[in-house]
Image (cartoon, rainbow, N blue to C red; front, side, top):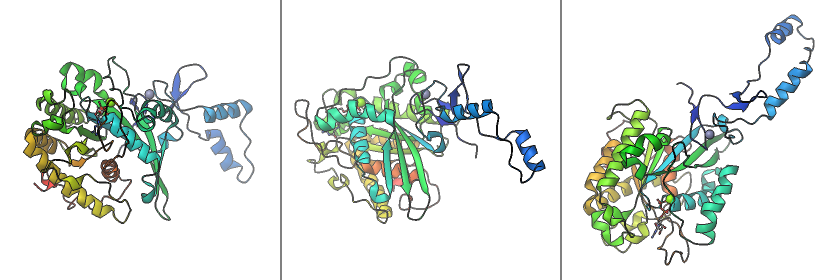
Length: 394
Ligand SMILES: Nc1nc2c(ncn2[C@@H]2O[C@H](COP(=O)(O)OP(=O)(O)O)[C@@H](O)[C@H]2O)c(=O)[nH]1
Ligand SMILES: [Mg+2]
Ligand SMILES: [Zn+2]
């Protein structure tokens, strides 16, 4: 398989090798430390004798190269050893108000607090992300318990959706450490259904190898009673169009036909704000849960994920989401559907009494299994690839 390009965790531009600032100005490929032809020749010739050391300018150049910080073509510094790890770029897609930012905040907070420790996974936020996460997400929501301000859609071409980057490290007992960069970014769904924005803003999704679609209950016709202000009036046409465009985009980014199989792309669907559905008799309330996490329990957990997905699909179809669900299940590869409540309860006058997230980790566990950091046993009912839609037992 061809070596994959790197993706900058700041601007999401892809590039083949890290660059360094050249002493002459500008950027050049990071030098690989190689022995010169003369060194190789002389080693062979003079066998056991110590090779003459490099000249002092050569030593100086080598030490510059070691000190130089690798950057992307736009000059953003890459986190330490970033290029040595595989990267999964996760686009979190949903309309404004769907709960993308709130979900990301509680998810990253839980990861940072060691939620994956029972699986032998440690999580570190990259330095640049950590600072932004603290100021813009953690402090307002989790310390002050305030509602997050709306994320403004990108308005300038070339503007970055400002991803948050995590490094996940897993040490299986006795085995070598495996590490992965996870780059999460907020993909405003508005910029997916407005045709004029598609080409300008959705290039970031070209780099995504994982997609988390966030759907809030208020947009389903049968669930209007729990809609937040403005949500219900939108109707289902926009979110459905958003998904059609998303699926087209993921395929065209890979040079695939509109019905081509999206190899290597994982998709999860988050039914957000599910705390608001608990009072409804038709809602499968036990799908909203914080399951115990252990390595031994993962296959069982993933089987439950499949069962719960099927029940949530039935629930949403019965509440007027038929077209949208058909679009999801037929156009995206093997999506699992998860009930999630980022806050555990509704805000009153802009503030939450307390924040107790439910179900936030599950979509990430599936994603990590799909991308090879966790075993995926239990996630697929058999090894043979099946058409999307079948997978959910329908
Ligand atoms: N009841 C409830 N409301 C939520 C939850 N998550 C978000 N909200 C509400 O939805 C609003 C929009 O969430 P936000 O994360 O800003 O949406 P985004 O535009 O997709 O980033 C928040 O201000 C909250 O009022 C949740 O888990 N439960
Ligand atoms: Mg937001
Ligand atoms: Zn960059």
